[in-house]
Length: 153
Image 1 (spheres, rainbow, N blue to C red):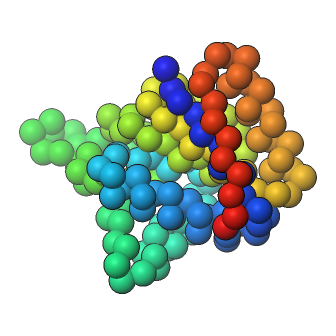
Image 2 (cartoon, rainbow, N blue to C red; image 1 turned 120 degrees about the vertical axis):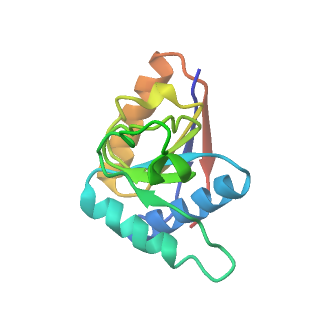
């Protein structure tokens, strides 16, 4: 069953939320996890892609954008998506990327239950708080184990 962690940030700035996501992704990557980062749209995917390239000289996180195409047509030749441990997308990934999902979406990812862990990031805007409460309530009613972490950015 998917373990779900809510990370409640003290800064509502979208850039701060994405920067925290980069730190969380970096930590999970360093621990050897395969990570899928779920965002709302292509613009957010590209924004996070750019931020991951600017983490710093000592924090390189190899990653790729999900092309939303099926993986390599030749099963003997793995695609670039299959080889990377960090994948960013706004649709369900076509790979076996089912270890950790970091969600930057305001909606419940319809395929979240295939992952072992889900990290939900929560800002302080009224809209972000309201949507995160709905997601929390849904997960709790479905019986998923939940953790809440209140932290600064």
